[in-house]
Length: 208
Image (tube, rainbow, N blue to C red; front, side, top):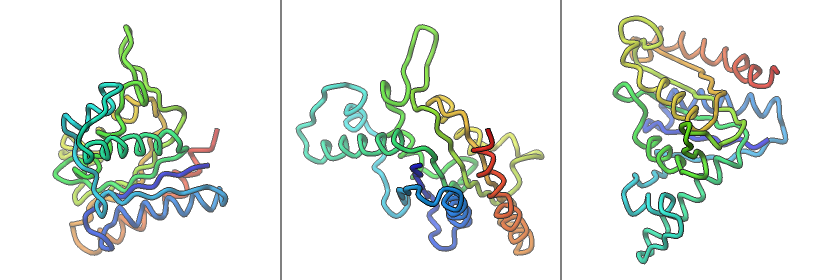
């Protein structure tokens, strides 16, 4: 098994999503001790956001950029999509920022959404090409968005599920901690419950 572990929180050691994503990887390794883990810290080593020159590297086949910096970005795009396609499980540490995902993670998503590699368009609509993988999202939120009046503002988990589904990845699971900015007691309770749920989520991936 190959595990791709990505974190996107800007908070470093203070990050709740990093704690949860690390716990998910630890549980995966407990079940599969020989698994290989590749790690990317999207906050510490950011990926350049997509622009026309970078996108041409995978949207216009055969494009060879004259600028060495752009060629390096094209090579990075290839590395990123190859890492995804080569993995069996993707573990994402994803805090909610302003009702959505960190821009650092969005930059990665924009690089791996490559026509002909992770999806293709057909007469009957788009078809995902990314294979039978699983994604586990360590999701953290300051408020309550899984239920209640703020649920309509959740463009974090709903977006990730739709995005990976577009790429053909249907097994998207969430380990979630909410109310993290609502006081120390609620934060501690939410993190404890999320950590307690990690084993159940991981085991569920291999239940069938």
